[in-house]
Image 1 (cartoon, rainbow, N blue to C red):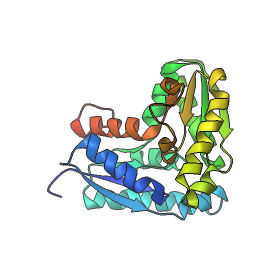
Image 2 (cartoon, rainbow, N blue to C red):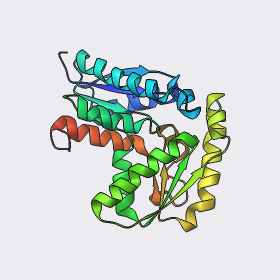
Image 3 (tube, rainbow, N blue to C red):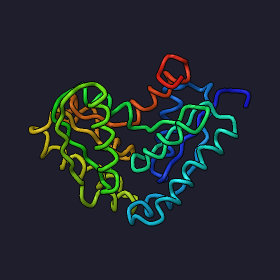
Length: 224
């Protein structure tokens, strides 16, 4: 490929437009984005169906992107983030999960981290990531988990407004008891605006993940 290219693997169409636009903003117009979408992955992971096949499939997508000549691969989905970590050890290019930088920031901000997700299948891998980052940094933390009921169904109906409102209402109920609010899925980021009360303690993954990717591409970040 003539210009630097990154590959993003999505498990829902809800993240394609927003992450492609964010890549243009953060990485610049000189970086091309190649998107791969497999919207059968999340239903399989939610049902714990053929998880090993999902793992092989995801890693296969990353390998195909490497053959295509991309400089790095980004997993847009936290549920399968651990597959990205495995692929990173197999490929010659950096492969990383979009929520990694968010987890690193979370353990720096406070001892009580509340992880919110709209999918139950996302909670466990996100908690494992946060706990791993805390252990690596030598910090003691407490992690709470909160499932935002009904938000994912609203998103799948195309009702982003209801999805975002459910997230904001649920987050507000836990704000006082949390040092850090972590929204586990990239698709949840739209719920948070600059006007949200307590926004300084709310972390979302897309921008932090894309900034980490920018550092990798420029040769200044881990994995470069």
